[in-house]
Image (cartoon, rainbow, N blue to C red):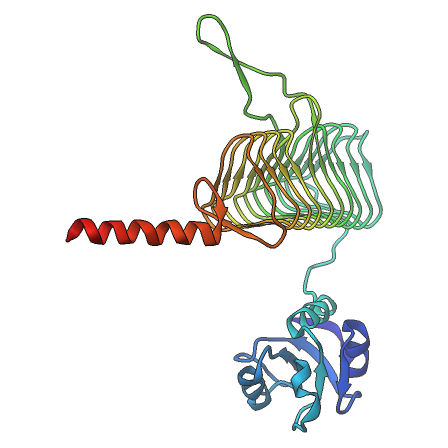
Length: 335
């Protein structure tokens, strides 16, 4: 990726909190992987092997770990405790995201909608009555923002996104293509004849600041109260969050995970791919759920930094011990 103007290594070091070693006047015009680096790029190296490859590349500079501090190299270095994190911060200065403002002639925006400054409303977008859209927000092609919904400042809404009534997105929210936010939850009551009646789904959906929502995610609004995705949470593609769920701050959820209604995910929890969580479950802060783990209804999991695995999910060491026992029993039976 390339920025609109080059940045000096001295400025990059200050921005990402790294220590400069070498010529700070060198100008950097983009970021790259080591394999595809070209003159003007900066790359990062997480270990000594990667550092040697980076030094042999065409890149002008390398972000390296602390162990490189005591040696001399042919390229300038930015020394960081976590090179990947420093590289990520540098990357924000070289964003290629298009900056546009205005409204495509094919968009339909209701006269009662409140549209902020420097907003882009793309082709085929529908913005219904009483919608509020904050400054510097981008709405991609064919998206629909339903009546009364709110989209904050500096949000980026991809194409074909549906934002239902009763949904509030706060600032700097990213929503990728095809996501559906604030749809009715899956909650039914059975009558005396065995027929299913939809329980009222009249709550709302609140998505706080700096949340990122992947492509084709679906998040239901609350039944009577609110579904909440708290500040800084990151959702991979094709994640489903049911009604009344509370997703804590800085939670990371990998693809194809499903969370049933009224469950709680604590601050900083990590959920692997294809995790399934039953209703009214409670996953504690910092808990780690391995891929394809299953959490039963009403289950409470506690253990910051502890990895849980399997169905029903239990600590990884217990899960592996059980597998070993089963393997021994199988061998004995074969004999």
